[in-house]
Amino acid sequence: YYFITVVGTAATTYTLLQLLRNPQTKEKPPKRKQNVADLIGNTPMVKISSLSKLTGCEIYAKLELANPGGSAKDRVALAVIQDFEKKGLISPNSGDVVFEGTSGSTGISFAMLCNALGYTAHICLPDDTSNEKLQLLESYGAEIEKVKPASIVDPSQYVNAARRGAQALTDDPTTDARGVFADQFENDNNWRVHYRTTGPEIWEQMDHDLDYFVAGSGTGGTISGCSKFLREHDDSIKVVLADPQGSGMYNRIKYGVMYDSVEKEGTRRRHQVDTLIEGIGLNRVTHNFSQGEAYITDSERVTDEQAIRMARFLSSNDGLFVGSSTSINAVAATRIAQRSEKGTKIVLIACDSGTRHLSKFWKEALKVDSKITLEQVLH
Ligand code: PMP
Image (cartoon, rainbow, N blue to C red):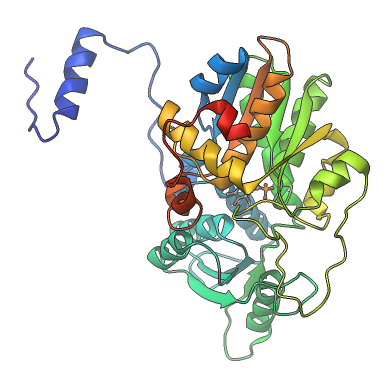
């Protein structure tokens, strides 16, 4: 046989030569798929070598960032759309519009899937969402409605704006198009899809053997669904909620109270407060969070500074380029490892990639010395 290739960086040529010498044929590639929706889920799990070596534990990342829309929210968006279709609330190519209030990831998943499945996505989001997420939404051609960051009790808040938009379209006598409100915070399809897919995948990938599961909470869907599944299969697994500064979930899990559960109308506060971290942190208990709260055993609060430094550390030492919420999980997992027996197995969720956070979170992370030590990260 002859292999013919052009040489640019020579990376392809090098890889081909390596493969010819060491054929890696034992694992079959995934079967071909019919559309982008079929690519969702079955995400890889990878060991974080640096943190594992330095702590003597085994720390793994469940790479939800490998979903086609770049985050775990692909699973949720698909489950929500399928549920609407089953209930006859929307049908493909009939002008129906899915409305969602989101600070980014969920909107991108809906934008991608709506295009693939014959719908329009209308995304309401706070105007301080990172540029990268906005550009992705624009690239998918979603309808975008930017609103001022506000508390959930404020009618202009993005979740409320999406709910209102869906109703207005459905009530509009001049069109047959229907609007549905995806409602990721309260919609049961959210935690259920993690119970049905993400949890079982983790269980299999860890060969039914893990000690800790670490995740943050935005809607609470991921931590609820995964922890419910994992603890039903092994109730000795500990579930740790990683929480950013300014969020009330840490105190809720630790002490049963939220120090900041009342938000006043008219404040320019968002549901996640005073943090650079996007996607997680709340000062209210959503339906999705409440579905799994009983399975959460502990919580770790992580500062923005620690998360920023950890992102740089993971990128420099492991080639893992992660977003802000993943970084929070990695700090929490490392702290757990440091106080655990050697060999303890810890799984964290790697929610999305750093590419979505280049202009905000990663702008700060780039200021950190790439040679930073783990002690300095955790300081
Ligand atoms: N990380 C990122 C980047 C997210 O966008 C989200 C969802 N908002 C989460 C973590 C948390 O996921 P969940 O909503 O399932 O709690």
